[in-house]
Amino acid sequence: MADLFHPDRLQKLEDLKASGADPYPAQANFPVEEGAAAGPVREFAADILAEAEKRVGETMTVFGRVLGRRGYGKLAFLDLHDQTGRIQICLQKDLVSAEDFALLKQMNLGDFIAVQGELRPTKVGEQTVFGERFRILTKALENPPEKFHGLADSELRARMRYVDLFANQEVRETFLKRSAILQAMRQVFLDCRYSEVDTPVLHQIYGGANARPFTTHHNALDMDLFLRIAPELYLKRLVVGGMERVFEVARVFRNEGLSMRHNPEFTMIEFYEAYSDVYGMMDMTEKLVVAAAKAAGCTQEDGTLKATFREEEFVLDAPFQRLRYADSFQEFVGCDPTDREAVAEKMKEHHVTPDGDSEYAWWKAVNALFEDLVEPKLRGPVFVYDYPAAICPLAKPLADDPTWAGRFEFFLGGMELANAFSELNDPQMQLKKFEEQVEDKDPESVNQVDMDYVRALSYGLPPTGGCGIGLDRLIMVLLNRNSIRDVLLFPQLRAETGMQVEAKVETDV
RNA sequence: GGGGGCAUAACUCAGUUGGUAGAGUAGUUGGCUUUUAACCAAUUUGUCCCAGGUUCAAGUCCUGGUGCCCUCACCA
Image 1 (tube, rainbow, N blue to C red):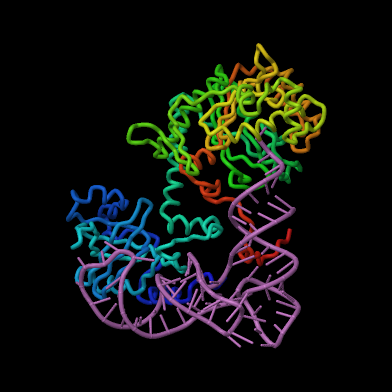
Image 2: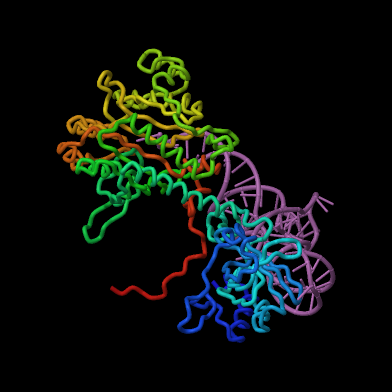
């Protein structure tokens, strides 16, 4: 591990210590006299610069990481970076003490410093803090990336996000906006009197979606557990219990392939509202997407909301288009999805074969046609609604035609971003659908009937609408990031070789 | 899992027909009181991803492996 630390910088560190300075002081502020008011207030660079003209002549204290340096012997300009941006520092030999000025020698790019001084413009007019006091707050032992190109290698950027974040400003903006988007969506829920809840991540029976789970084991209970693939069944238990509007920002885990749109763990915003239904969920989804788009900065000068994703422009003003599944099927596949003969013809044509004789297998094949021929045509934003009931075990069939179920999927930018149901609340029908699912022997589908969930339904789930939104994919579209990895702080990567340090202590039980 | 591409200094990248390793940034030393990719001079740093093979000679060609990217498959 020794080569993690740059030898030249270790020397500087020793020099710094020899001069009596602490290279890692606990307190960031300059020392203040005992009994005096707490030290100077820390301010963000962007806030200072925003009202710089009013504040010329004011003495202030700034903290940050030095990422640029232009030195002149008796004067140096530093680029000080913080969460909000950059502010220029000028250290002049005749303004600081000899000790402070000597510290410049021990400072490298990447170090954190504090500077106290007066704000005023330079000769070329840039508002600059002219330091009167200066200290090093943290010595960096590794070089920052190349200052012009930043960190470019996509693997290194994901693996060392802590470097990517300070080296590439747009990366920091992406994640600050991600935070703002989530916060805006939370506010929509709170305004609609939803309560945020936390349900278990460790599930004894995995359900609520079709996906392979991660498996783990609880030692004390000697019991296998699964990381959740969806929070759905727990959230609906809460509605049974009388928590009528709930949402969860849920990290879910699916043991499947990685791609530009898939990461083994991702964030799903799921919400349930009693006495609502799939149409109410459309309204709610519109509110959430609009709020998210505003937080992402999609508002144009004329007041419309627009996002550009993969060089395609999307208008995000509500209401969004609503398209019946059967109608979209008719339009893009070319036949009525309930016309078995015509559909069978189309299946042959597109090399789709039902995997068995069951209704479920048939409709799964029908849906494969939908995915292949319709989904790519759906640019969005569009709600596709009334899905085949056979492939929707958790959605309530339509009263007037049980072939179809109260469900929508929301498409935007060529991706499925949300999925919602009029929740199935008939416990007997739910049990039957669960049993059919298990019998279907699909190794990737649910392998056990969640009898406790059926029991919960038998206590009564009021008519309820529920929806899950893929937050990461929504952010991809709103911020125009091509890969899900670009909107995840730490996407899944293979283990880096040579970076594990074995514990030297032997475990003796 | 199939196909294609890439892997060279801490970072960004060159490297010709196979001839013994380069630039810029960062670092170090010196100079400079208004720069902003500052400038000037000097200077340090390499498991050329790994393991074999061909060859007098391999960063370069071949085989296998590893990692990453793209793409297809899988994944409602």
